[in-house]
Image (cartoon, rainbow, N blue to C red; front, side, top):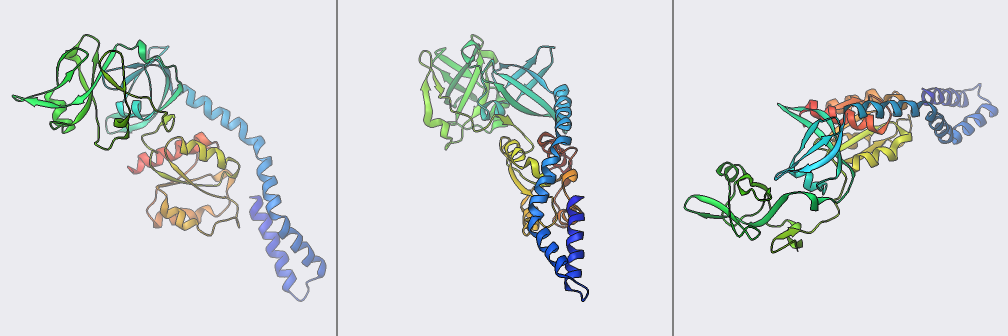
Length: 333
């Protein structure tokens, strides 16, 4: 590695400088190299760009082969992405809400692996089209009521009671007075589902807006991010190396709801607090092509603090993200 060779020369000159045979010329050379070290490393990083671009393009092509891209069809609970080639992927209600998806939005799904018998996907809103008005999905927000062993919500739209399925009442732990959203295809109350149970302090409850007719709907808010990542959301990821891609790493992790901790891969860089970063992280990603022989030390720190770590499959930001996802899935965190 260039940084290792550079530091070996510095060490050699320092030894000569302090020895009896040392000369002023060698001492001067040592001082010049010490001052120029950061500039040298920056130039090495810049020149590595030429080797990075083809790799990133290849990585994106591989991802395109796996992902499902299509229009979102809203269901009473959740939604379905329908691609042009007929593939379908179910989108859970929690991600529809967290990303502010609407019927007709263009959404992509990238498979991440399996949790038990269930497939795990990362969802991204590629285009917001605002076609919610074209959906036949009718939603009602109201309190749960109980009478004679039956549970229901009153629909002003239909001017009658919507009976809730006992299984949903049990699985959601519903009690009388709980505020819920019940949804169904227009004209088919028998297909009603409890789409969502609101927490008492849910900020969305402050923004009930009038919809067509007497029913109430939640006012739309700008979602905090456009990627739903069930693996990385709420996690802290330490990336070591990949100096050129620091900003891209941060963007791609933060848009997934994760926090990035970063450490330079060059020997002698700003690494005084590296072990505290390892302790704070949920997973560490080691970018081998752009980091020095410090990596074995970081690997031992991860083992000591029982943190999962992985060597990145590529230097691009997508490859680092995918590596961290797979490490977390494998570790069960």
